[in-house]
Length: 131
Image (tube, rainbow, N blue to C red; front, side, top):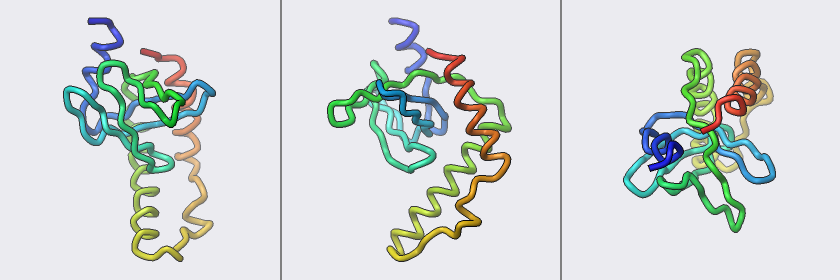
C-alpha cells in the first residue's frame, strides 16, 4: 500500500480535507460518509457533494478529475472556523429549499474577519502539507 493510500484510508466521518482540480480550483471538504470504496464529502463553501474513490482519492467531475491533495489536520481554531462556515452555508441551502425566494442578507453573507483568516490560512496550509 502506498503512503497516499494509507493517508486516504485514514479519512473518517467529520474530517476536513482538501481537494483540487487540475486547473487549481480549491475544494475544502467535510467527510460525510466513508466506506471501503468511497469517501462522500460536502464542499464547505458551496455545499456541493462529492464522491471520491477511497483508494485513489479522485472524483470524476464530468471528465475533470478532482483529486484529494491534503488530509493534514487543521489547527483546532481553524477547523472550528471551517465547520462554522459549513453550518452557515448549509443553513442557507436549507432555507432556500424551504423558500426558493429566500436570500441570505448581505450582512450575513459577508465573511467575518475570522472566516477570512481561516480561508487564507487553509489556502497556504494545504499547499504546504500535501499527501
